[in-house]
Image (cartoon, rainbow, N blue to C red):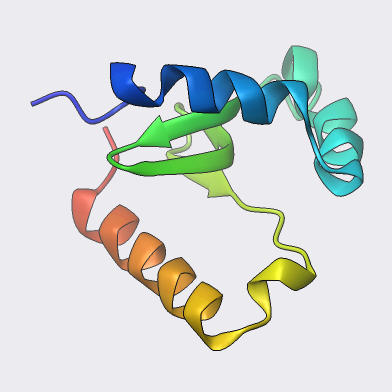
Amino acid sequence: MKIHNLKYLKEWRKELRNNLTPAEATMWKYLQNSKLDGRKFRRQHSVGNYILDFYCPSEKLAIEIDGSCHDDDSAQLYDQKRTDYLIVKELP
């Protein structure tokens, strides 16, 4: 069963890649072109219904850059559900 980069999220992933937050843009400078010890990262990579800010397939590592919009209770609940989902899936 495919869970990575589902087609129905393609346009949303593209929109997010084209409109990085300042924090995401700064992080991308350090991750792009395999600058981090030769590891390849992808921007706005989706796993299931969740779009991750950055994902390194070789390390099965997801990086989320969460700003103040993640401070309220509903956002924190969403973030926890995303984390739980990713842990259970043991990303391929």
